Image 1: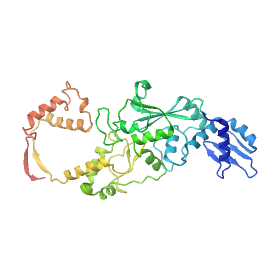
Image 2 (image 1 turned 30 degrees about the horizontal axis):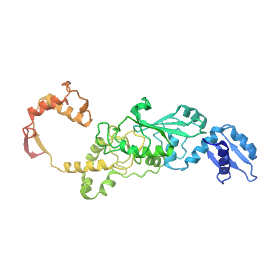
Image 3 (image 1 turned 180 degrees about the horizontal axis):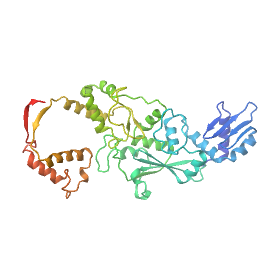
Image 4 (image 1 turned 60 degrees about the horizontal axis):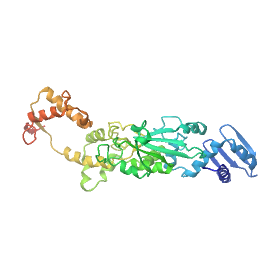
Length: 379
């Protein structure tokens, strides 16, 4: 529990510094004659003796305890501190670019403390962050972290976690036990909760779930995000990935449409083909930016670069109109990841398992290839 006397002493000591105190509407400065100037959202008093200042500060306990909490957090100007302020909708003053995470207006200390009594909830990708005041602590915050899909579930129904490093394990596999090569894919499994994290532990856990997203969000807000576009990334690859710079320009558009959209990745793509040459697909609406093509995109680009180097030929394949439409439905179902949702009895869906097996039996040969006749001339 915080000691109000200690809070006042710490605040006075900070006021003695050349820069004084200025945070969330609380301004405190010491004059040359060792009197103080105190400014709050409602008042401004000058020439205060130490005793008078102490009396005045006792009338604004929320401002004092708020200053103490953030003074203890430290790290002014850091991504960690800015993120924790964002979590409770505190004003963020160092932004030089549009902040795409501010869907709600910032709250002043009075309104924020009222809201913190019940808890303030923010979402970071598939993470739900709830912050509240600890009863009787004089401004201490407590953070709860869980999956957004578990928003309405009771804590006792979720797997309780304490160590922020557990986030590394929780983010490794999806709900079906499949490995997640991309940490920002919208496939984070649910069913867990970190019920009581400190601010520092919260940031650590979020960094394990979504590496570098806090840092890049902070850099973007300050206008300091360094973006590596496709050509820059492709040209610096070596070894087996050296071929990706041969991927045709239009194929990079197709790649971005396949990989870098909200349904596949929660990051918002900020890189383009090159400076001044934007890709056709939209970059997404995620709260945190993607500053360069990720390793998964680079690995996939290698395969596509090899495939795009093949010569095109014309093939003839006899299909009914319904069979042609079924092939399109099969591709869509696989691309959208909905094959597991198609019921065995739903034979009206072209991606139904029995429909697909029937088409294979009818149109594919014993070696699994399409019974097609290839025209020898190139297109």
